[in-house]
Image (cartoon, rainbow, N blue to C red; front, top):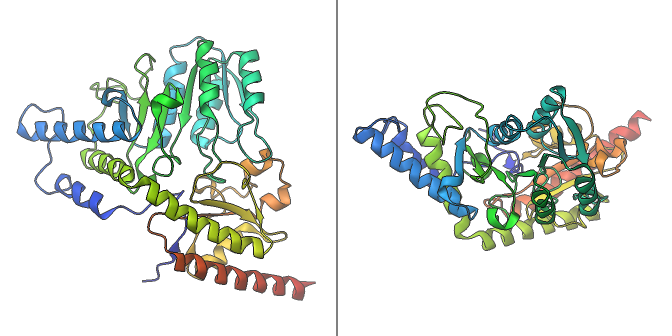
Length: 384
């Protein structure tokens, strides 16, 4: 079977073999209890969930009682934004200019319900313009603020600590989508100072379909799913024990050798970007603090979708922007917000390496990329 080299870890990561083994007993291995049941099968399931809750909490310096399990990042973001808004008078919500659709869309739903929706601007390098954001928050006093910690396309990091202090000081809530950050940089719920932190399992070598909202217990949310009152009454429904167990172990494993994995990924990224610069690529966000695994770049006059398709057939899986918007032919919102020309933004492609990526794959990718670019230039010359 054809298996391209996988260079799209920001979209999803492969399931760690150790995580799979931990999940197997809950997938037909004799453990099928409902965690709400009082018998031994139920108690086993509840104990497994409790352990996973501790593992997730430890990964982000939170208390286990602050961890609410969900189906993933989208649900966690919706739970905080809609859940907090339901217990507040109609007011203002401010989000980063390049938030993921699962933040942007619930914010727009609030807008249709009468809320005022504002965007916080970016700098030319793709990070939140901290001073402009602080000025805007102090002036407008939004009841809710939601800003991602790491951009899923550029990998650029935002300064949430300063913004969180200001937002808290004036009595508002602040939420952070940290889906891309977990497992790639140290993550500390307490140090960030936010009221809610969104995490996702499949970004850290855990299973699809699991995530968490780490929630300051002083924040009152309205549940999105009513029912039996699981997850502190905020996420009713019988728990997906296998996925939760896998998510918990994945979080624990990601903390074991984080500095070494960060160094490995950064070495690969640096090698990639040296090669890209030799090919005259335009690299985005490189002057800002970034995730160690992400490169977002474009070539003048080269269509991003075409480049990704040709490289996929050559044996390299990568992305033209974010996986959540892969069906959208419009140029990257992130790049447009950074002031990049639409023509160049349409050519943007993303490589995101992972803990299993090898240097040989990066070297082979650069060779294939150079050959593909030459082919495209020859085709363009023939068409003229």
